[in-house]
Length: 266
Ligand code: NDP
Image (cartoon, rainbow, N blue to C red; front, side, top):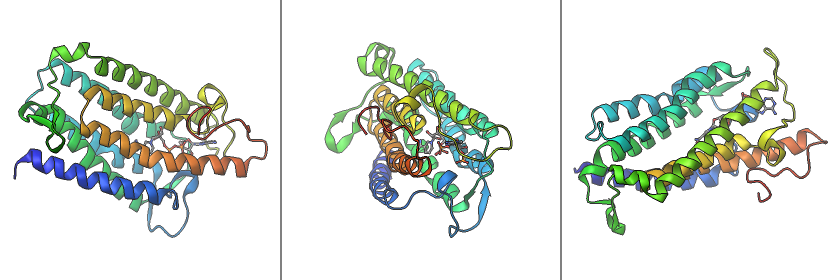
């Protein structure tokens, strides 16, 4: 089978599963972190869970870059750089600084691996190879493929996408940093976070993550990027709602004006 057709098929399947997961997560919060509970089978230490779960994002992306047709072109190299700046931090640095004693079910690890493997394959294969050989980025909708030549560096979609990526990255990093500082080494209780975007929302780390992936999707301007941004939304939107409710139930003095995810809106 033509790989482009396979990739399109995989995107459709992934999109449908993403919609189902999105709906499901409003009823059943993913059992890790503060929402971890019994009844989800054997567990693994959270740090190792994160490292293993996120590892395909680095391994597959780098391999598909190395064997791809566009490894000597500037724009794809910039996408590689952006991806790695996020995932080296998330997969290799972030887990070692976590101040948590939580464990996560192997089931979460398993689903995370499937999500990372399929979505990383879709994005990396598109950027580094299929965007060069395919006439259309989405054939059935007749959307022309973006050819990632140096002219793309001056396109507003690329420029705005990169700016959003940088803004989202900074908000995400800062917010995760604030959370880490809430606990001294060895502590495991929860506190109300303050500072930065916590003034406005309960989960600014998720808010930053969403902006980051929307920016990435704009910058690569193709369905694989928008699918990844959608999957991130499907994971984080229901979860930020659960976090917000949990904060309000746990802390009677929780700031009333704080929203769940989007400042002043939601
Ligand atoms: P959380 O905000 O739930 O937790 C992050 C860490 O901070 C955990 O170690 C947690 O401890 C600790 N923490 C959280 N709140 C408090 C508090 N009030 N007081 C003390 N410690 C606290 O984030 P996630 O674990 O869900 O996600 C981590 C990162 O991964 C985020 O940056 C997120 O954006 C990203 N992510 C991305 C996804 C995607 O689809 N792209 C999906 C999921 C996450 P404990 O473990 O004890 O709860």
